[in-house]
Image (cartoon, rainbow, N blue to C red; front, top):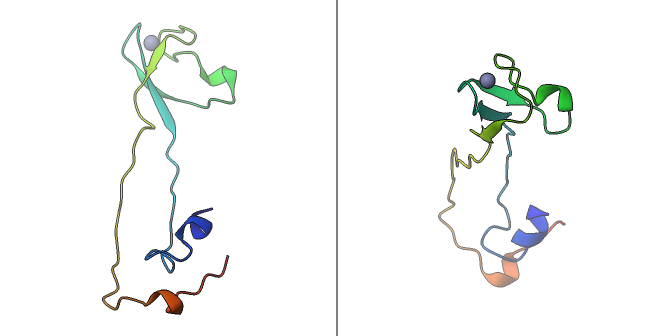
Length: 84
Ligand SMILES: [Zn+2]
């Protein structure tokens, strides 16, 4: 999808690397922070307080850019070739 969107833009030759992080929540009963799997109900209970689905999202909203590499040469529009 990214390659399609980047086609014929300055991002034509760019690459995207995505690292998924586990979803962590904070128990509203005891404050315990634990990891859940949204597709597995067995993980939705606090391991310490045993409250089911009594939590708020603690992480999984992260968006971090580790690095950006910029090429110095600016390609002319007719030089851009997309391989999508
Ligand atoms: Zn708890």
